[in-house]
Length: 78
Image (cartoon, rainbow, N blue to C red; front, top):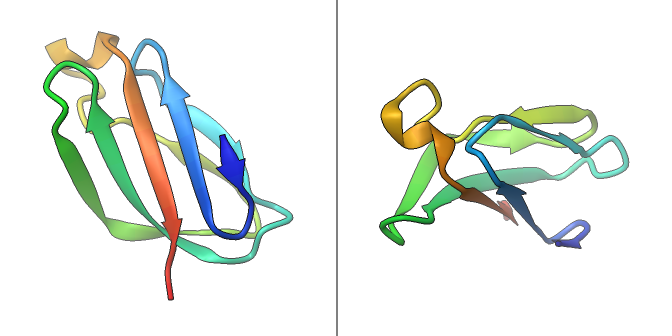
């Protein structure tokens, strides 16, 4: 789901990294991951820069929690 230039929601069904094409969107975004099992929202400290394709990797990648759904929430930085 997207509101280009404003916000994006990206769903990773099995906790795998997801590619997001931001080549047409040069804005910078903050990222938070929603853990589907606990409803915990985990903020990412490094912003995502637009203008290119980016790989979004859930925070539990490589752990026992990795194989469950995660949702990335990107919001445009001021």
